[in-house]
Amino acid sequence: MAKRYSRRDFLRFSALTAVAAATGCNRSSGPTTNATSASGLSGDLRILQWSHFVPRHDDWFGPFAQEWGESVGVNVTVDHISLAELPPRAASEISAGQGHDLIELLSPPANLEPSVLDLTDINEEAQRRHGEQVGLCTRSSLNPTTNKFYGFCHGWVPDPGNYRRSLWEQVDMPDGPATYEDLLTGGGQILSELSVALGLGMSNEIDSNMAARAMIWSFGGSIQDENENVVLNSPETVEAVSFMKQLFDSAMTNEVFGWDAASNNQGLIAGELSYILNSISAYRSAQTANPEVADDVFFTRPLEGPGGTGLASEHVIPIYVVPEHAENPEAAKEFMLHLVGNYDQATDNSELYTFPAFPSTVPNLDEWLDDDPYESNPADKLALLKDADQWSTNVGHPGPASAAIGEVFGTFVIPQMMAKAARGDLTPQEAVSEAEAQVRTIFDQWRDRGLVGGDS
Image (cartoon, rainbow, N blue to C red):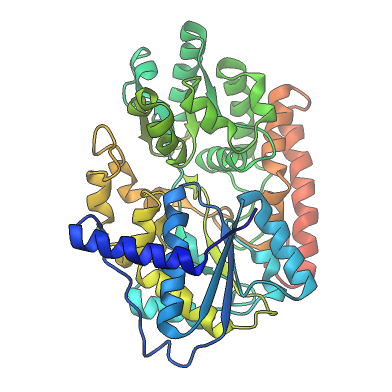
């Protein structure tokens, strides 16, 4: 059900803010509004976005948006729905030609490009105000073929490895695995000796998508090249798929074929998994649900493949679009700029889950990661995320997150390729060949519409 914020919520938030300011309890500074650039705004602004994994964020966001609206003469309504509901809801509103003025998606919405406004103006303005945008954010919102910003990416979420230190200490790896070979050796030993499996999904859900891509990239393969030509069927990809089968046989159980997006989180929190690939959301949940496990959860950078390379995709990436049917696009644009200008509050209220697309907007991020204000034990547990932008990339790496890449992602071609080989339904080479045929069909269809580059 959509969560709506009323005038009462706004007044309550204002009162709480005043109390926090008086008592010194608020780490982030209050909102700053550029009144000059926002002058002349009026009417209603209807925002649709996800129900954040961290409830504190939504408790902050609605009143924050309404406070801005009050200051510039705009009546703001915020509706929150689940991550899974967002894409069909956005598609439904765009098809009907009516609905919200501003819609947030959690993966690159390149497929919506023909039906949304070009946001080059505010992307350029945000960079003028705040400096260079993180590269993976630009590649997740700009179509280099049409030179159109189909969205505005205001943040992103790293996707580190999450591991149980007490388990990995028992196989002489207290800092967790550093390479995929470590994962195979240590994970297999933990399963055989301690009866705890590791969890890389191979099903139709987001974490399985991310795990499969990270493995392929780290083995030297990719779905496309930097020019948007399909290159999935390569020796490197086949090697990665072969490795996934070996890893499944040695260190995992059949549950990974039927997982949903919450399964690896739940398994880690319950103490039933030795390693997962996820954001810090599972860890934050464990801090409340199972503090003993939370204290035992630590993080790794992407695991290195045979060539010494380790890459991970961003976990989710919040991107706003303004549909062509929007009745108040100027207010939508001004609000996005206002949000980015106050992104220290967004990152803080997400409990350091959401990182800024414009690093200068959260100058305290490294300090917070070194000394987590949300009671990590030890306090610097999240410090390895300080260089996450150096080992994270977009789902279309080494090219952009195009509409074709989005369809491959949304139809789960890649984790299903892994699953077919891991279960023994197909050989690794057969699974890769079948997947590439599917990918080529998808690319050809979007290329015919002029939205994807490349010629093969």
